[in-house]
Image 1 (cartoon, one colour):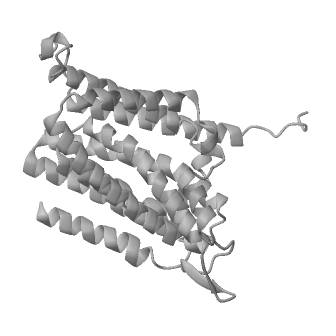
Image 2: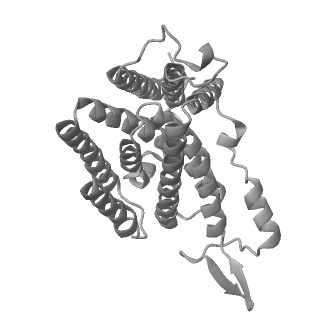
Length: 325
């Protein structure tokens, strides 16, 4: 376990603070190489888990990794909007993403520790997790909120602007600069806060989702780390295509809805609430095998991606109109 954490720490540091610190816009081939490398490493890690711990933990890891990776891709929709809203220069976007992803990892780590402790003592929390995921799935199916298409500053950032001097111009990676003998914050401070608060909201989705697939904190944490590795390269690779993945929210909604139902079923199995069957397990509730969870995730996300690509190609191949004879 210690070796695993050391290797993941090395991956994370190299990905974000060695490669990610170069102030440039990565090429397509550079992005593809990094993404392929980290995807292969996740597959290898899952294979090693299979060899040393058995098939069940390995399938749980693959299921959790795919779910978290898909939710991380969904995060990119919001990141793209934030970058555009605050006019972050392209050469700075990689640096901003590095900080944002680091904050996301720290927040998810804290959520995992708290979540594992709560679940160990109060199994009924699965009812809350399940209901939360079902509501999230319904919102995804109902369509994106206006905030998704036109980012609006939250209350923390609006309050900050009232009490802190913030310039309208960036000055490299500097957070503070001096103008006319007066110290000002640059817009980077607001961008970091916007991405950080967004990370908190997405952590509320991702942690209940993966706890619905496994209760092992080690699997939960490693799946989250692998889901975040290579995310900044994915941002630049898919930045122009994210709005083309029109069916990804539907695929995510199916996955989150399925996990929400699975969580509620597990809560009924380990029921400790006195007003439900006298505080004992509810009979007749089937158990969903781990491989079924993986199959649902692969089919839902794979189908949504394939359908998005098909629609994009059919739209591109459609005549622009007016010149048919």
